[in-house]
Structures are given as C-alpha cells and as structure tokens.
Image (cartoon, rainbow, N blue to C red; front, top):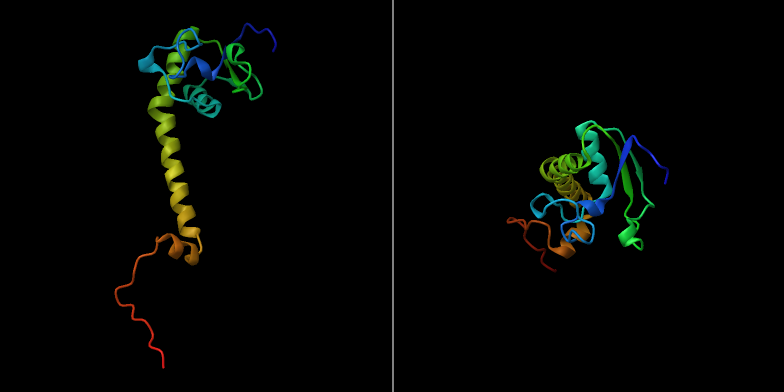
Length: 136
C-alpha cells in the first residue's frame, strides 16, 4: 500500500457487528452492520459522492488470513464521520435495494425454469379442469 494523505484507508471490519472494539470494529453496535461487503461500501461511497478506490486482495492486519479488501475514500470530513455516513447509507439504502434486486432475480430465474423441473419441485399450479386420459 502506498502512503497517502488524501485518502482514508477503510476496511470492512470497521463496520462488522460481530467483532468487538478490540477486534477492530470502529462504530458503536447500533450503527454497525452485519457482514459488510466491499461492494456495499463502494456503493455507499458512490451515493455519498466521495471518490474511492478498492483493492480486493488487501487484508485487515488483525485478520491477515482473511483478505476482505479495502476501500480508499477521499478525505472530506473526519474519518469517524465518514464511517458513520457510510454505515448509514448501507443500512438504510444499499442493503434494502440489493435485497429487492436479489428477490426480483430469483423470481425471474423461477419463471425461466423448464416446466419439468417445476413439476418435480411442486411449483406448478394444478389445473382444476384437468382430466386424465382413460386407457382403451
């Protein structure tokens, strides 16, 4: 990593609700996020209007065996306020939008399944006017 005075180095572990303060969380529990991802943080920085750079292979020094990535965000306001703003964006806008998009994709995928798979899984609606053929 390069030394840089124009950007904050922000790890997803700063937001992780499952970590303690000693383990690296930098926000209070009521503002923390469960399993934050680099993509969510990137989208939040974009929504706030901060310029950013992501690196997927970087690891938080206290969890060096788990490379979750890092996002470099430009310095406009203090680091703690930047973390709070990013967390707020992820909790209130980014997560609900991603969940909604995921549900829509699942619905589309179900519609595109072949009828045979739908029958095997019991997903088709039974026709009320269906009458089986009689053998002759």
